[in-house]
Length: 249
Image 1: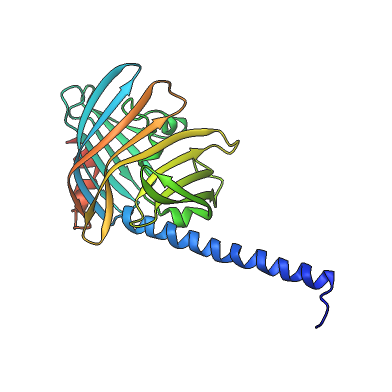
Image 2: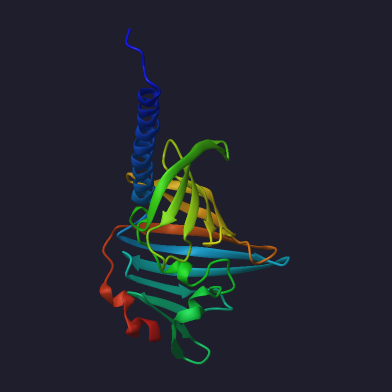
């Protein structure tokens, strides 16, 4: 029998170590793409509730919303306190119409990091529907049971410095690729926000979140629950919905 040299053993171990990592990276990307397949839409229309719990008080806001791809979205609030407040996203620009002063304002710069309507989402959280698999490089960090479901844990690293959250950690259901939970991190490693799926439903061939919770960890005693009703996915929406005229009407 040929005697293995130390170098031969070292090279063999190196191959064993490298090959699983390559396979693991590819598997992580496949998983992330399936999450995208569930949650990224061509178009969406829905009625919704935004339930904000903050410092032992509860605020309930209702809305109707439409969106097309990553470029256009339109939201109108319908609860009595905010009725007539509208948001329009066109490309990278976000506008708000206030019925109190009947004016349109462009939200830009540092204002994008502010809370939207007192919720745990910032304005910039609401304006990006681009695929995670396009924006981040994923690796599998492990697997565990989350909320009674077997889940992969994915660590994501942003491809561009312009991302609001340079790192994310995801818990993805192994059976149906529901995004069960995710955590958003600053470049320093500080955890900024947490999302938890409460309920998803099946629409055609995809799973889509219809009830979820977001927590901004920089706001003590705060969480925002989102409930979506009458969801319509991937059906044509007129361009007139996403117009300045509609915003000001």
